[in-house]
Image (cartoon, rainbow, N blue to C red; front, side):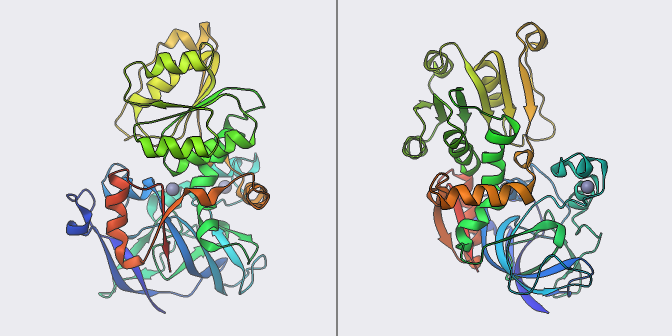
Length: 375
Ligand SMILES: [Zn+2]
Ligand SMILES: [Zn+2]
């Protein structure tokens, strides 16, 4: 079928993106869904920092690629052998497809799925197929098995979770990445318990979602750290007990004072090894640092090795919130419906697909939390 989508052809172009236009909304041919695949009419797609990381080449991916990995939509057709979904179902995408059979899937850690990671690195669907062709007939890559900056997309059924059809797509979309990654980091990876102290670095979409997760889990105190005053104000409104200006020279001293010597958990959502270092030093003896952001692959972390042993500190990675999406999407959506996870507060901008480069400028300048493209 004929559709339109935002294609990235070269990474690392100059800013402002409104002028360099790294993403071009082009006519595309989309092949019908193969066995185990779904054709989805995309309704809403969030613009995430990991999309920007591909655009600015800090997380290189094969191009040309139809970008976008955080979205919700409605199923228009199903491929052969699909039994769990039907036409008309509303779905949220998972940006790691899980095969359900590899050793990681078998032990309940589907975000580590080996065939899923291989397909994502290659820019294909889980089956290895590519379903996009541009106007010249060249195959385009899929972004994390989703490619949501398009009117229609084809995904593996292993990349989708059915949700209630009455959920607004613009809110549901955020559950695919920001909410899963942030809330999951707090409640799955860190397993925060009531009364434990949490400090969160970075109040972007993921950091604010981690804050909502910490609030829902009953953490106290909850310290939000960011350089942007408006984001700290939003964090306070969403339940942070304290906020610390990241640029303050004595930020670490302030955090230690608030938490009585250091936090039980420090969550880093910025994707900077320097911030991760600070997060590590913001924890108490016995504390756990959870790293959620994605630093550039060349960056190294420097911490005193002995402190892991002598102070029983832990450093844990959290990919997609250590989620089991079939369990966590319904669970987190139930909290949203109950008013315990006010995810809609993260939505700061709504825009059209043709304005996508403007959205990346806003994101690069830290002027937005979550921008959603409505399709
Ligand atoms: Zn994302
Ligand atoms: Zn697997």
